Image 1 (cartoon, rainbow, N blue to C red):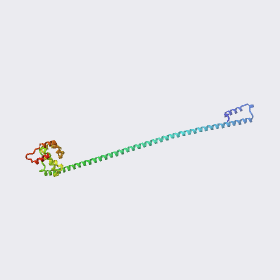
Image 2: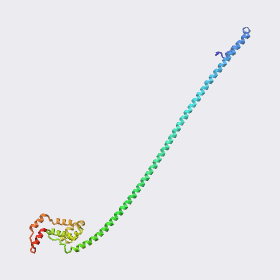
Image 3: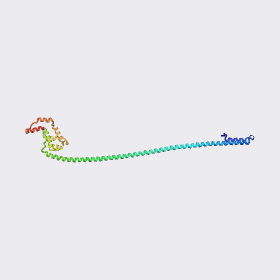
Image 4: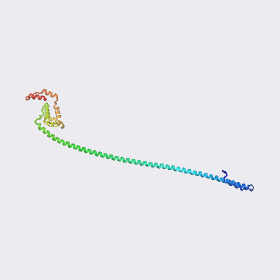
Length: 272
């Protein structure tokens, strides 16, 4: 590659033409030099063209690299935007799913609340129905008991009257002597068996036969106790203090009455 540039060649040519005639070379030499200068000029031109070409290639390469970099940058930006968009879509999707889940939970809670309220209403209705049925049953039982009681009282009154008429001249009156109470109760028991007197009537038949003192004493008993012949007997026995020792003392102190036969006296001793 020639190291002379165009300006240097032109200056050399001008200097040659300005030399004095004696210094000038032959035309052939001049032509040779001119050719040489033209060749140098051509080589210089080729070098310039090659340099321009290389520079252009460098510029094109730089432009291409710049475009590639811009494309890569744009692709990176697009990729970031795509990821951001996908993230936003995913976030929106998750938000919608969360909203749907929340709405479903609210609907489920409302449904459960409605079902619970319905169950409570049903339970309340069942309780009211059961309470009404129990009240009805209770009233029916009360009415049935009252009717049965009225019928029983009517029947009891009739039976008391019937047995009272039958035993009017058979049952003895209670003796005033407490020592003879055992004999009185034994006689009553025998009469109950003989005439098959029901137990619930026995107390009502014996009350009119008591002594005034015994009637006063049994007045302290309740209505239920007054209907039980056994409780009346136990109560009077305790009130009159008829203990085994008392019976023994009465037995030892017993004497025959003047108008009493020996057989009657023995019978009285047996009952004492």
